Image 1 (cartoon, helix red, strand yellow):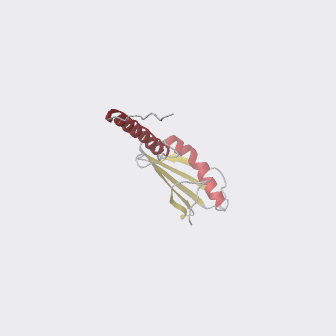
Image 2: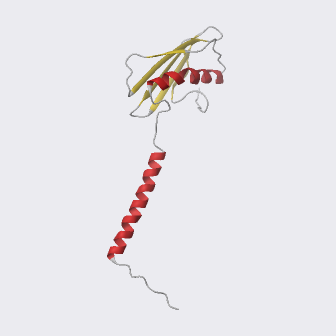
Length: 136
């Protein structure tokens, strides 16, 4: 029994090349889409709604208790692309708490700062609460 030889013509080689490039391109596109950076809180309302619990969890992890829930409001000048929220409250030891959260749609970055009694507990960190690790 003999092996039939498959003749590869230029047309077949070109088709194989185009199909290979398409498969590689689709794989690369899938990887890029899977790793695309997105805001955790993509709207002003979601940032404002999530910030009290996230900040309280961050403070609790650092041994700081709150006497009540934080109250939050939109900061002047926020836009759909530049999110800005401020929260305030009081610790169980009667120190004022100020929280500032921001988000940037273009860079997909969040920044959070928490002040307790005017002293930063966290400053310009990318996330708050469970699952976040910060120095300081």
